[in-house]
Length: 226
Image (cartoon, rainbow, N blue to C red; front, side, top):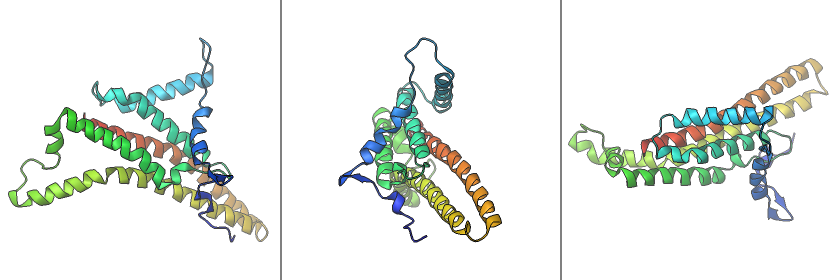
């Protein structure tokens, strides 16, 4: 019970060398691939989910925006597998690190914004000043819209970090309570353990939903700039 709650969020090391890079590269190795002409059920289900997800995100895009489809599908698969692997005992979840989430959010956001300024600069600049704005409010609205644009990648990263971290902390607390109550009151232990199982199912759903939300918001930023 005296274990540090945030110990599982410390980046692991191997021989004093950071192991986060190896952990980040591990999830893609779990994605099954087929070398045969006829796929098995697992590969078929995987391809169906990828097509469904890409169709859901790419429907609103034009031809230029659809060139990002491979990147967005790779992004959602990477975040989903990383979140799910982080639910395993004694594992490390890279998406609980704000620095990593910022490293994903900032380049994607910047790429979408730069594309918007290059392809249709008038529409991009029009977002800073809504039509019909009173003249005295123009400087204030320009500042507000600029700030709202700049905090978009921060909002992406913080949302993912907060949701994954909160779920892990809650599971850790309930797991510790289950272990402590096991020697005191068996009926209470069963109730808490049932709650832990339900929370684990919820966290699996949250891991997938947060991957979808992160990718969908990047897709919306891309849509606004293409």
